[in-house]
Length: 216
Image (tube, rainbow, N blue to C red; front, side, top):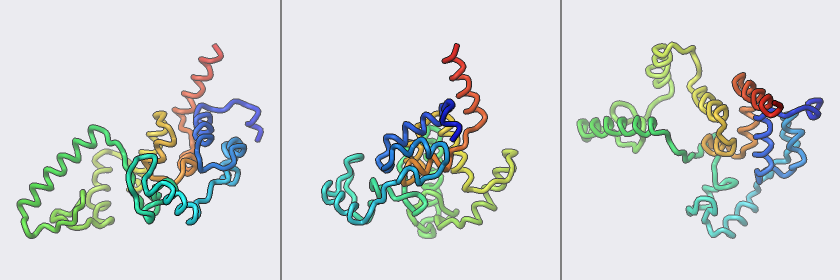
């Protein structure tokens, strides 16, 4: 706890602000101890019981006050967001590059569907096999992902590491942890902050530069 007497980094300051406004954090006085120790017991994360979920659902008439959409109660978890780890879906604003790539992919897929006709297995999926079927994980990794890494001159990594890389890049670019948490599909921002609490050398340098400019 010796660091409590010192100066907080820019990252820690942003983390504290995010936790202070997070409704799931019951113990605001535990925010500083959590930042210093990374022990979530200090936050007293709000448990969301079945009774609380039903009471909130009935009070809101099934309408989410955040997005104004109607949800059945089985789709709700906390703020109607099912965590990604439990199969939940996330809504994200894509980059222009990603949108353009998806549009090109859809065009190729439409052409394949028209060419194959009844032989196309219409599973209503974005990414499929050459005939529209379900992709197998090992097939994707072995046939597509590993060769792609080699062509790019990158070291071997897990396919899931792409998610961690994206999260780290978002946070290192100053994206608010709450926004990153929603894009990742985490149940609470505390999960995001704890999992990606590491501060890269670049972020440390930026924090030091910011402090230096304040002291000039």
